[in-house]
Image (cartoon, rainbow, N blue to C red; front, side, top):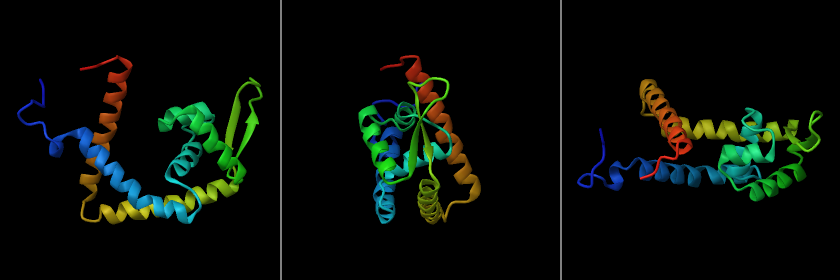
Length: 156
């Protein structure tokens, strides 16, 4: 059963529009916090992906963050130059270069993480825990549904 129709599909009820605008507003609010640490939002996201082991190579980070592979390599170069991660060849397959957070990288990522948590807590201060948990659960469900649709080649 279809939810949307041409009669009622407007930006104010479009999932894509609402998620994109929320993301844009969040990025605009968080970028200055990252700048204080000498980093950017995408660099922090890469550090967090490494921290939570969502990726351990440039290619895995690029997939996790939906970032161009070439741009991710340059981003990793920058993080390595700052001493926030190291590159090491995999012991089983020398073609693979593993990325690992350094203690300094973890410290920077954690300071930014504290600021991000503070931001989201301020934004959600008027939401009760159940509303926030429901929103997170629904966004996770949307994420899984969209990944499945993409893998199945679902198109309009």
